[in-house]
Image (cartoon, rainbow, N blue to C red; front, top):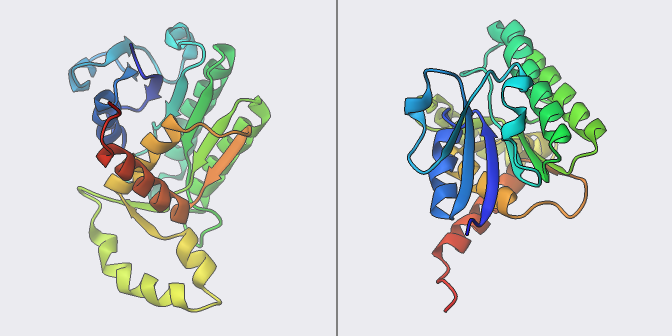
Length: 230
C-alpha cells in the first residue's frame, strides 16, 4: 500500500530530480507530469502522465483527489533579464496548476516561491507573490516555501557570500533580512519539501521561510535515520 499520493509538475528539474527518489524511498505513489519527449527523464517507479503544463485540460484528470500537489516548474537560473519568462512560464504554469488541483480536490498544494521582500529580482518576486495570492483565494490547504537561493550543482557561486551572511546575521539592523534571504542547500530544500509533504498544515495556509526550511530539513533527516517500528 502506498504511503502517500503525490502529483508533481516540474519533477524532472533541479529540485524535483532530488525529491522524487526520496519520495519513492518512502513508499509514496509519485505521478509526474512531463512534456512529450521527456518521458526518459522520469525515474523508475513513478507514474508518468504526458501533457502540456500550460494547458490543464491535457492532464487535469490525472490528479488523484486528496493527493499532495507539488508545483516546481519554473525558469532555470532566474535573473533580472528573464522577467518576461517569469510571466510566461512560472506564472502561467502555476495558475494552471492551481486551477487543476482545485477542480480535482487535491488535499494539499505545495508551492516553492521565493523570499520576499528582497532587494533584487523584483519581477521574480512579483510573479511568485501573485501565485501566492491565487493560492490563498483558491481555498485549498497549501504550503508555501520561500527560499532565496538554493545551492547545488551549477549553483555554487553564492558560497563566497557565506562570511558576509554570518556578519549580517549578527547585526540587529540587518539580522531579519539576512535570515529571510539566507542560503539553503539543495539537500536542505529537498528534505524540507519531503517534510512538508508528509506533514500537511493543520490550517489552510502555511508559509515556510529560510530558517524553517533548515529546521524542516533536520526533522526530515532525523525521521529517515529513525529505526522502523517493529
